[in-house]
Image (cartoon, rainbow, N blue to C red; front, side):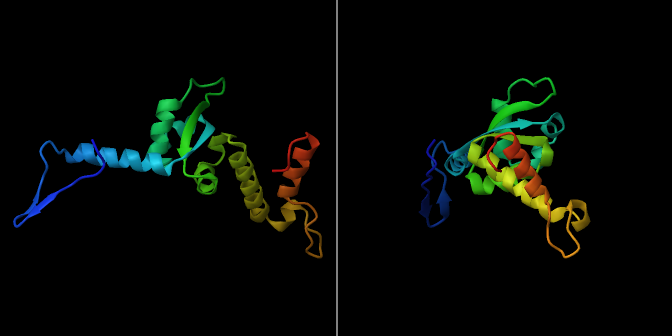
Length: 159
């Protein structure tokens, strides 16, 4: 069914075209809207406790994508899936919202932005005494620096 609906307007109001089904038309509109809006495909791993809470935690289009694409659970019960997202920028808060119960595997740019954002949140959320501020108030070592140092130590790019 076409997503364009033409209505005839007469003196007495609207006339429904023959064979028109509102529920089917609405589903078609939503499907094509999501297809146009959600252009980025991200590979993720989802923890078992998040799987049962997905409808309460993520957008309906993401939940449907997980249901369709989820593989079998790994040894730890995590499930790999592919989810559609708008773009990297809006995807960051969406995929950070479940916290440590979701891991972004790809694309690399999204994975890097998630790591950078998480490191910045950690850096701003710790009490000053917890990460080594010296008496003059100068930061000597932050969690973001520790993440970057760890990444360099194993030869990974800085998050």
